[in-house]
Image 1: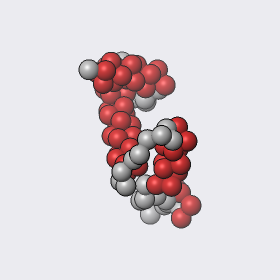
Image 2: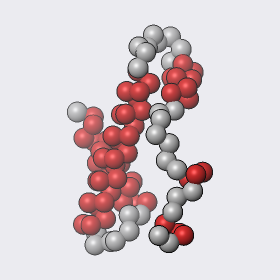
Image 3: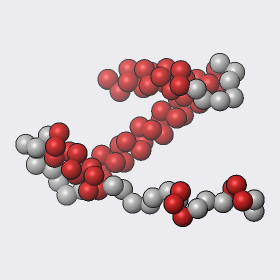
Image 4: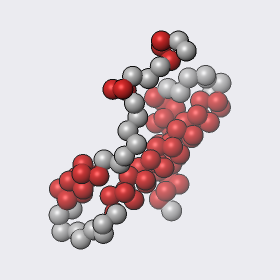
Length: 88
């Protein structure tokens, strides 16, 4: 295996959700809400799903423009489309 393809210990992807951070942010933003125990995990899952859908939409937008690289303009266009879809 080439040296550039190995992943060092510091660059390894974390496998746990940042629960303490999410709880702290939720309490600061909305201190009056009484949240269930696993609410922070649901928020984290929702963020991950949104990022995944955003990446897929940006990739299709880049393919439409016959571009091999996803650029910031593709992500912005995908975000506009996704926000319109999620409005309902």
